[in-house]
Length: 282
Image 1 (cartoon, helix red, strand yellow):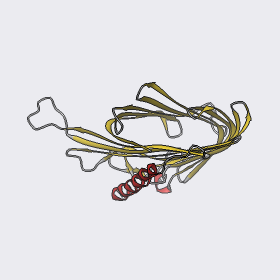
Image 2 (cartoon, helix red, strand yellow):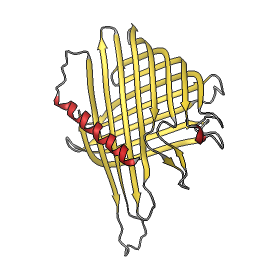
Image 3 (cartoon, one colour):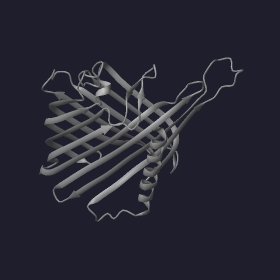
Image 4 (spheres, one colour):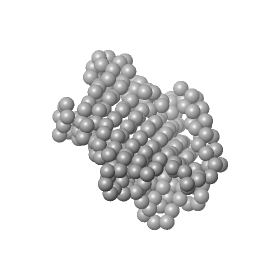
Protein backbone atom coordinates (compact mmCIF):
# COMPACT_ATOMS: atom_id res chain seq x y z
CA UNK A 1 0.00 0.00 0.00
CA UNK A 2 2.79 2.44 0.91
CA UNK A 3 4.45 1.87 -2.50
CA UNK A 4 1.14 2.80 -4.17
CA UNK A 5 0.89 5.95 -2.04
CA UNK A 6 4.41 7.03 -2.96
CA UNK A 7 3.64 6.44 -6.65
CA UNK A 8 0.53 8.64 -6.42
CA UNK A 9 2.51 11.35 -4.63
CA UNK A 10 5.22 11.29 -7.31
CA UNK A 11 2.73 11.52 -10.18
CA UNK A 12 0.91 14.44 -8.54
CA UNK A 13 4.20 16.21 -7.88
CA UNK A 14 5.17 15.95 -11.55
CA UNK A 15 1.70 17.02 -12.72
CA UNK A 16 1.42 20.08 -10.49
CA UNK A 17 5.08 20.96 -10.92
CA UNK A 18 4.67 21.16 -14.69
CA UNK A 19 1.75 23.54 -14.17
CA UNK A 20 4.22 26.36 -13.50
CA UNK A 21 5.56 26.14 -17.04
CA UNK A 22 2.37 27.82 -18.31
CA UNK A 23 2.26 31.51 -17.22
CA UNK A 24 -0.97 32.78 -15.70
CA UNK A 25 -3.03 35.05 -17.94
CA UNK A 26 -4.54 37.70 -15.68
CA UNK A 27 -7.31 38.35 -18.23
CA UNK A 28 -8.74 34.87 -17.70
CA UNK A 29 -11.52 34.17 -15.26
CA UNK A 30 -9.51 31.42 -13.51
CA UNK A 31 -6.80 32.13 -10.95
CA UNK A 32 -4.59 29.18 -10.08
CA UNK A 33 -1.75 28.87 -7.57
CA UNK A 34 -0.35 26.28 -5.23
CA UNK A 35 2.57 24.95 -3.28
CA UNK A 36 4.41 21.65 -3.03
CA UNK A 37 6.39 20.97 0.14
CA UNK A 38 8.74 18.18 1.14
CA UNK A 39 9.90 18.31 4.77
CA UNK A 40 12.52 16.21 6.53
CA UNK A 41 13.27 15.58 10.19
CA UNK A 42 16.03 13.39 11.62
CA UNK A 43 17.46 12.56 15.05
CA UNK A 44 20.46 10.24 15.38
CA UNK A 45 22.33 8.91 18.44
CA UNK A 46 25.26 6.51 18.63
CA UNK A 47 25.48 3.81 21.29
CA UNK A 48 27.86 5.92 23.39
CA UNK A 49 25.33 8.76 23.80
CA UNK A 50 24.62 8.88 27.54
CA UNK A 51 21.67 11.25 27.46
CA UNK A 52 19.31 8.68 25.97
CA UNK A 53 17.34 8.85 22.78
CA UNK A 54 16.20 6.80 19.82
CA UNK A 55 17.31 7.49 16.26
CA UNK A 56 14.49 8.32 13.88
CA UNK A 57 13.86 9.83 10.48
CA UNK A 58 10.66 11.42 9.16
CA UNK A 59 9.43 12.89 5.91
CA UNK A 60 6.27 14.80 5.00
CA UNK A 61 4.96 15.58 1.51
CA UNK A 62 2.18 18.08 0.84
CA UNK A 63 0.27 19.79 -1.96
CA UNK A 64 -1.92 22.85 -1.39
CA UNK A 65 -3.58 23.96 -4.62
CA UNK A 66 -6.17 26.71 -5.22
CA UNK A 67 -8.12 27.16 -8.45
CA UNK A 68 -10.64 30.00 -8.25
CA UNK A 69 -13.13 31.39 -10.75
CA UNK A 70 -14.51 34.92 -10.88
CA UNK A 71 -16.65 36.45 -13.61
CA UNK A 72 -19.16 39.21 -13.14
CA UNK A 73 -21.16 38.55 -9.98
CA UNK A 74 -20.20 34.84 -9.73
CA UNK A 75 -17.29 33.40 -7.73
CA UNK A 76 -16.24 29.76 -7.41
CA UNK A 77 -13.38 28.96 -5.03
CA UNK A 78 -11.75 25.52 -4.92
CA UNK A 79 -8.96 24.14 -2.75
CA UNK A 80 -7.25 20.75 -3.04
CA UNK A 81 -5.11 19.45 -0.17
CA UNK A 82 -2.96 16.32 -0.17
CA UNK A 83 -0.60 15.49 2.69
CA UNK A 84 1.28 12.34 3.61
CA UNK A 85 4.08 11.69 6.07
CA UNK A 86 5.96 8.79 7.63
CA UNK A 87 8.40 8.42 10.51
CA UNK A 88 10.72 5.49 11.09
CA UNK A 89 11.99 4.87 14.61
CA UNK A 90 15.05 2.67 15.01
CA UNK A 91 14.05 -0.75 16.29
CA UNK A 92 10.35 -0.35 15.42
CA UNK A 93 8.75 -3.06 13.28
CA UNK A 94 6.95 -0.63 10.98
CA UNK A 95 6.84 3.03 10.04
CA UNK A 96 4.20 5.27 11.59
CA UNK A 97 2.12 7.89 9.81
CA UNK A 98 2.68 11.51 10.78
CA UNK A 99 0.13 12.90 8.31
CA UNK A 100 -2.45 11.51 5.88
CA UNK A 101 -5.05 13.80 4.32
CA UNK A 102 -6.92 14.05 1.04
CA UNK A 103 -9.35 16.96 0.95
CA UNK A 104 -11.36 18.97 -1.57
CA UNK A 105 -13.26 22.16 -0.78
CA UNK A 106 -15.55 23.89 -3.28
CA UNK A 107 -17.57 27.06 -2.68
CA UNK A 108 -19.81 28.69 -5.30
CA UNK A 109 -21.32 32.13 -4.80
CA UNK A 110 -23.49 34.66 -6.63
CA UNK A 111 -23.32 38.26 -5.45
CA UNK A 112 -26.24 39.43 -3.37
CA UNK A 113 -25.07 42.82 -2.13
CA UNK A 114 -21.73 44.35 -1.22
CA UNK A 115 -19.41 41.61 0.05
CA UNK A 116 -22.29 39.14 0.46
CA UNK A 117 -23.08 36.22 -1.87
CA UNK A 118 -25.72 33.49 -2.05
CA UNK A 119 -23.65 30.32 -1.78
CA UNK A 120 -23.46 26.54 -2.04
CA UNK A 121 -20.51 24.66 -0.56
CA UNK A 122 -19.11 21.14 -0.81
CA UNK A 123 -16.40 19.53 1.31
CA UNK A 124 -14.91 16.04 1.04
CA UNK A 125 -12.06 14.59 3.07
CA UNK A 126 -10.58 11.17 3.66
CA UNK A 127 -7.18 9.48 4.00
CA UNK A 128 -4.98 7.46 1.64
CA UNK A 129 -3.25 4.86 3.81
CA UNK A 130 -4.10 2.50 6.67
CA UNK A 131 -3.90 3.69 10.25
CA UNK A 132 -2.93 1.62 13.29
CA UNK A 133 -3.34 2.01 17.04
CA UNK A 134 -0.57 1.56 19.62
CA UNK A 135 -1.08 -2.22 19.49
CA UNK A 136 -0.59 -2.24 15.69
CA UNK A 137 -4.26 -3.03 15.09
CA UNK A 138 -5.68 -1.50 11.89
CA UNK A 139 -8.31 1.12 12.74
CA UNK A 140 -8.69 2.93 9.39
CA UNK A 141 -7.74 2.83 5.72
CA UNK A 142 -8.45 4.57 2.41
CA UNK A 143 -11.99 5.99 2.26
CA UNK A 144 -12.64 4.78 5.79
CA UNK A 145 -13.48 7.17 7.26
CA UNK A 146 -14.69 9.55 4.56
CA UNK A 147 -16.56 12.77 5.35
CA UNK A 148 -18.81 14.79 3.03
CA UNK A 149 -20.62 18.07 3.74
CA UNK A 150 -22.93 19.96 1.39
CA UNK A 151 -25.33 22.84 1.81
CA UNK A 152 -26.65 26.26 0.68
CA UNK A 153 -26.06 29.45 2.63
CA UNK A 154 -24.57 32.93 2.57
CA UNK A 155 -20.95 33.85 1.89
CA UNK A 156 -19.19 36.96 3.17
CA UNK A 157 -16.06 37.42 1.06
CA UNK A 158 -13.88 40.44 1.68
CA UNK A 159 -11.02 39.12 -0.46
CA UNK A 160 -9.37 35.87 -1.55
CA UNK A 161 -7.62 35.87 1.84
CA UNK A 162 -10.62 36.57 4.08
CA UNK A 163 -14.06 34.94 3.90
CA UNK A 164 -16.77 33.32 6.06
CA UNK A 165 -19.54 31.01 4.81
CA UNK A 166 -22.74 30.39 6.78
CA UNK A 167 -24.85 27.34 5.89
CA UNK A 168 -27.91 26.74 8.14
CA UNK A 169 -28.99 23.62 6.20
CA UNK A 170 -25.94 21.36 5.85
CA UNK A 171 -26.08 17.64 5.10
CA UNK A 172 -23.17 15.59 6.45
CA UNK A 173 -22.35 11.97 5.63
CA UNK A 174 -19.71 9.82 7.37
CA UNK A 175 -18.67 6.54 5.72
CA UNK A 176 -16.73 3.74 7.44
CA UNK A 177 -16.17 0.16 6.27
CA UNK A 178 -18.35 -2.15 8.38
CA UNK A 179 -15.39 -4.29 9.48
CA UNK A 180 -14.42 -1.35 11.72
CA UNK A 181 -17.87 -1.31 13.37
CA UNK A 182 -18.28 -5.06 13.97
CA UNK A 183 -17.32 -4.75 17.64
CA UNK A 184 -18.36 -1.19 18.37
CA UNK A 185 -18.80 2.35 16.99
CA UNK A 186 -16.09 3.89 14.83
CA UNK A 187 -15.62 7.58 13.92
CA UNK A 188 -19.18 8.31 15.05
CA UNK A 189 -20.74 5.49 13.01
CA UNK A 190 -22.74 3.11 15.23
CA UNK A 191 -21.90 -0.56 15.71
CA UNK A 192 -22.97 -2.68 12.74
CA UNK A 193 -23.48 0.34 10.44
CA UNK A 194 -21.24 1.68 7.70
CA UNK A 195 -22.58 5.24 7.48
CA UNK A 196 -23.97 8.05 9.58
CA UNK A 197 -26.15 10.88 8.22
CA UNK A 198 -26.39 14.21 9.98
CA UNK A 199 -28.25 17.44 9.21
CA UNK A 200 -27.29 20.71 10.81
CA UNK A 201 -25.61 24.10 10.51
CA UNK A 202 -22.10 24.85 9.34
CA UNK A 203 -19.82 27.90 9.58
CA UNK A 204 -16.53 27.91 7.66
CA UNK A 205 -13.92 30.65 7.88
CA UNK A 206 -10.69 31.30 5.97
CA UNK A 207 -8.03 33.89 6.81
CA UNK A 208 -4.52 34.20 5.40
CA UNK A 209 -2.12 37.01 6.24
CA UNK A 210 1.56 37.91 6.31
CA UNK A 211 3.09 38.37 9.76
CA UNK A 212 6.17 39.94 8.17
CA UNK A 213 8.15 39.61 4.97
CA UNK A 214 8.41 35.92 3.94
CA UNK A 215 6.26 34.73 6.88
CA UNK A 216 2.62 33.82 6.19
CA UNK A 217 -0.11 32.15 8.24
CA UNK A 218 -3.11 30.39 6.72
CA UNK A 219 -6.08 29.66 9.02
CA UNK A 220 -9.11 27.47 8.29
CA UNK A 221 -11.96 26.93 10.76
CA UNK A 222 -15.07 24.76 10.41
CA UNK A 223 -17.87 24.62 13.00
CA UNK A 224 -20.75 22.17 12.71
CA UNK A 225 -23.86 21.54 14.82
CA UNK A 226 -26.04 18.47 14.22
CA UNK A 227 -29.73 19.33 14.62
CA UNK A 228 -30.63 15.64 14.90
CA UNK A 229 -28.43 14.74 17.87
CA UNK A 230 -27.17 17.01 20.68
CA UNK A 231 -27.03 20.26 18.65
CA UNK A 232 -25.32 21.98 21.59
CA UNK A 233 -22.22 19.85 21.00
CA UNK A 234 -20.46 21.74 18.22
CA UNK A 235 -17.86 19.92 16.12
CA UNK A 236 -14.69 21.99 15.66
CA UNK A 237 -11.97 21.57 13.04
CA UNK A 238 -9.20 24.20 13.05
CA UNK A 239 -6.14 24.09 10.79
CA UNK A 240 -3.18 26.46 10.78
CA UNK A 241 -0.27 26.43 8.35
CA UNK A 242 2.71 28.70 9.01
CA UNK A 243 5.32 29.11 6.27
CA UNK A 244 8.62 30.89 6.93
CA UNK A 245 10.48 31.27 3.63
CA UNK A 246 14.26 31.09 3.76
CA UNK A 247 14.67 31.59 0.02
CA UNK A 248 12.75 30.70 -3.16
CA UNK A 249 12.87 26.96 -2.49
CA UNK A 250 13.69 26.45 1.21
CA UNK A 251 11.37 27.17 4.12
CA UNK A 252 10.38 26.14 7.62
CA UNK A 253 6.79 24.94 7.94
CA UNK A 254 4.57 24.50 10.98
CA UNK A 255 1.18 22.79 10.60
CA UNK A 256 -1.29 22.49 13.48
CA UNK A 257 -4.73 20.88 13.46
CA UNK A 258 -7.16 20.66 16.38
CA UNK A 259 -10.39 18.64 16.15
CA UNK A 260 -13.26 18.20 18.58
CA UNK A 261 -15.96 15.71 17.62
CA UNK A 262 -17.67 14.09 20.62
CA UNK A 263 -19.17 11.37 18.40
CA UNK A 264 -15.66 10.09 17.69
CA UNK A 265 -13.88 10.79 20.99
CA UNK A 266 -14.82 13.07 23.87
CA UNK A 267 -11.52 14.93 23.82
CA UNK A 268 -9.61 17.41 21.67
CA UNK A 269 -7.46 15.77 18.99
CA UNK A 270 -4.28 17.72 18.18
CA UNK A 271 -1.78 17.16 15.38
CA UNK A 272 1.41 19.24 14.93
CA UNK A 273 4.12 18.98 12.30
CA UNK A 274 7.29 21.06 12.09
CA UNK A 275 10.05 20.69 9.54
CA UNK A 276 12.55 22.39 7.28
CA UNK A 277 12.49 21.43 3.65
CA UNK A 278 11.83 22.24 0.03
CA UNK A 279 8.86 24.33 -1.10
CA UNK A 280 7.92 24.85 -4.74
CA UNK A 281 5.29 27.41 -5.63
CA UNK A 282 3.25 27.20 -8.82
